[in-house]
Length: 441
Image (cartoon, rainbow, N blue to C red; front, side):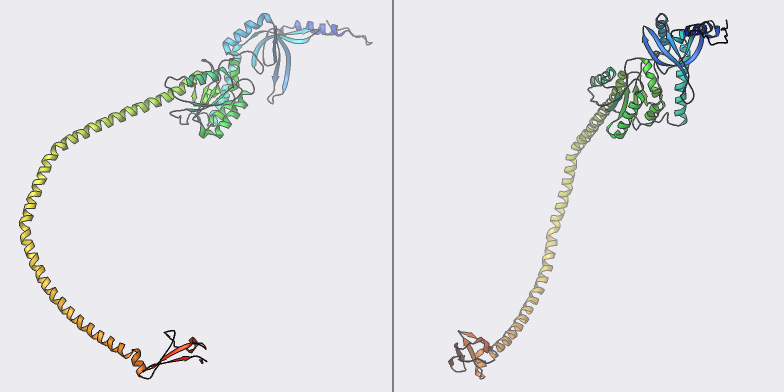
């Protein structure tokens, strides 16, 4: 019924006013049991489940909002149905289709009561988001880049991205350490958050740090074990997937359960289900390499053994041939020796006669050369004797010259004598001893 109109401001109470709104809203069939698409915000549980349903525009601005309640009597049934179908728990940021009824209370205002949820819509929205990310990666030509990297035959140096202290990380390391072949693995942990809004940025930072020192590792392993599958939404992220696709090293993912697949699994070189499966893959890769080495070792040993057998057969053959060959050689050499011995006397006699003739010729030449040399030397000696006689001091004295000495040494320059020196002057006949009183140059 309409409100009474008065000419004078008389007014009604707020409770009366809101009661009228309650009757209008709660009595409107179009506001009851309606399927509504919205995003969950401010989600909390305290006996009952409280949340806010919002709608955002393309720029992310909230354009509609209403408080909503999922009563305890319905919460467990709806949550169980939703998680069984989607593998997720209701939570903030999730886009859902809910069946709600408007409820107006004079004390608490307008709100909505949730009576049902459509898991199929959420599954479709999750698939849509994942499909859009994969299409973008495909269009940019990077979706298969990590898969195209060569996978090492023996990945022993492993960069691990996981939450520090996580059970999955411990299982991974224990699996590697306990391999039955005794293969040694070297792991380095690059800690990151593996659930919630910090997952993508922290994993990206870890990838960047690893790629800065990629020459120190063979592969990258991203692992997350246990926990709620709702947290896997963090791995359906374009930026994170693009970083994995562009990684310098092959990436192995083990971040979900048996039935879970994330965008990262589509771009990683080796997607497996669990941390343990990641460790088993690495062990298997190294085991195959070890088996190949063992096969090559066996093949080399067989080749060497076969070669040794062949060489032994050759040796046995040659050892039987050597005596006969040696005897044949000895016989040939003995024959040649006898022939040479028969030829030697004639050769030696002819050589001796020839050398005798040469020797007689050389003897005559020597005798002639010796006579000529003696005559030349006699003449040279006579000439030297004549010169010596001509230049002898006595002949010089005989021609009127004299020789002056001081202390038995002949002097040729007046400066060699000083006043007071005793000098001896030798003449043709006799000598004169004098004392120097003055010298003139």
